[in-house]
Length: 202
Ligand code: SF4
Image 1 (tube, protein in one colour):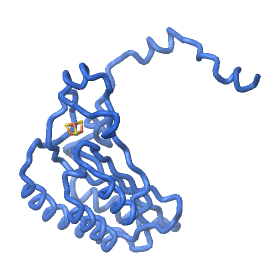
Image 2 (tube, protein in one colour; image 1 turned 60 degrees about the horizontal axis):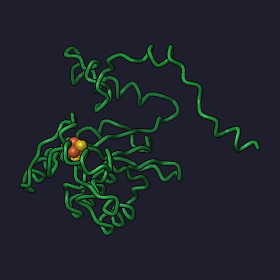
Image 3 (cartoon, helix red, strand yellow; image 1 turned 90 degrees about the vertical axis):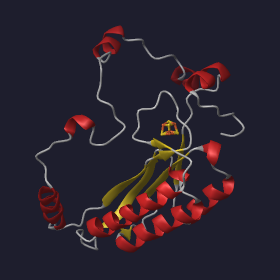
Image 4 (cartoon, protein in one colour; image 1 turned 180 degrees about the vertical axis):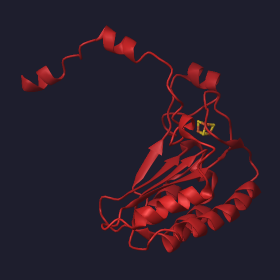
């Protein structure tokens, strides 16, 4: 009986719904675009990092790595991405990313553990498996990865361009969360948004 009670449909609160029926900032980046400021310089950033290093208890770090390439466009998407089949674009991007990882990581004290790592996009699996493993390895060299069982290392995978072997290898490299985008399984909707992705594939 208790379980049945838990399944009762939630109360439809029209007033509550109306209160939040407003335009909200896009949340495809964090902080959201509204919080970007021109008057926050590189020096300000480094000052913040230095100040945070001074905390008596070393604070864990979180990092987001954006892979801004996709193999095909989904019409509903507002993410920062480039549609291309040219894998050389990833090489150029990775060269610069490695430089940034090296420069930024050096600013953090080594006793600060990287406890949250997320690869998003775009399509992170636009990178082939050797590029992805090298990227994870590079991050591990420059940051101190947390060894805590509760650490969250996640990746977005597009199942249309990824097989089980890719997932297995990133898991072996330490990734313990995967998110897979699904908009709709209705073929008409998939056609309309140009995201054709079968249930089996997903
Ligand atoms: S795969 Fe993802 S990021 Fe790329 S266009 Fe589609 S929704 Fe956007």
